Amino acid sequence: MTALATSDDVEAVLGRTLTAEESAKVGAALDKASALVRAETGRFFEADTYTVRRKVRDRKVASLDDPTSVSEVVAVDGDGNETAVTGYTLRNGVLYGLGCDRWVEITYVSAGDVPSEIVTEVAALAAANITASAPEGAESYTVTRGPFSESASFAEATDSLAPTPSSLAVIRKYALRLTGPVSQL
Image 1 (spheres, rainbow, N blue to C red):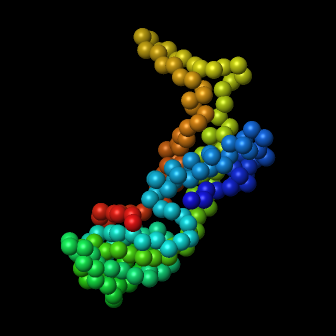
Image 2 (tube, helix red, strand yellow):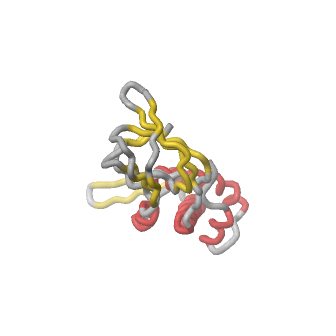
Image 3 (cartoon, rainbow, N blue to C red):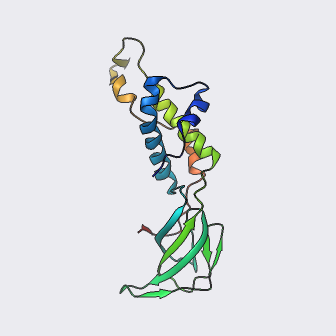
């Protein structure tokens, strides 16, 4: 899957061009940040055709990733028998009017639009990842409070993604709202 932001987006977040060292790291950092956002949202943010399996609840199925059209809906019973489903309505990523309360396989086309807030959050996560560095000459640190102490290496911190609570709040605004069991085919 492609990254949800570019090195140009990272430069815009930083307000400067990337150094040679940062340029060498930015691709991997963007991939990691994009994977984190996809995991948090349950969305792909890529234009493509997807087939997913969803459980019908109250004659509807939610949690489709930005569908522009649905090409097929097939009900699957406990024995694996498939029956074409018709007469449904697609509105805001939800299929309404499904005449069954079982699993359905839905084939749909996703627009793949990446919201600008997501692009900014991915770029900010990647920027923080590639610019994290230890103070000059430092390799580790120790914090002591009373009888307790904690030590860590700066090398460990530079390879991690640590979204802030406000960043997670923005990312989770775009999460799919699941209404039942989900299976990705």
